[in-house]
Image 1 (spheres, rainbow, N blue to C red):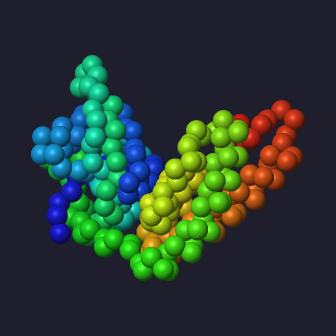
Image 2: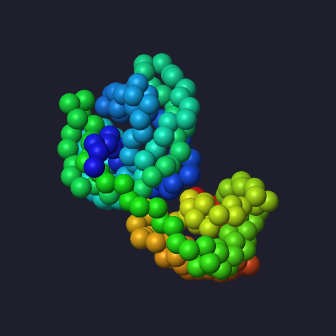
Length: 218
């Protein structure tokens, strides 16, 4: 068990996926600077109740992902734009508050969601064309820009990328993050993609006269 600085957000971070953040609150400036000084990550957790900024510390979900800082752009007044990447999932055992007023937690890292490749590959092979269809539709609607030519071969990398790309509520993404095994993660992601692609195709075939697909998804 280790103590980890925590950043409650209205977003879900997945292992291997990027997250850009604008740091403007004093407590999170101090937190990020401390992580930079020690070269350690912080944890990203989805807010269950409360707000991201300018108020009391929010109540977070208990499973999150560590964020490694890759790049920092320093701005006036100590503000920062940072690029991070998700690394390891963790479970919060207990919560506390640092003397600099940001949240900390005693956390346990969750074991890798690895399963036998013979179990994971068939499902990832089913998921891949659904991801391609989904990206195709959203790209044509100018909702996202993504390169479909190089989808990950490794099943869990594909599952996390698919979960990251989904244009859905954070609560649904949190459920994916909390799945215990690679098989469950792939199965649940595949179910969501089948539902979303069918819905998007129906929207594309019968758009409202005054509103295109991009307007509906933003």
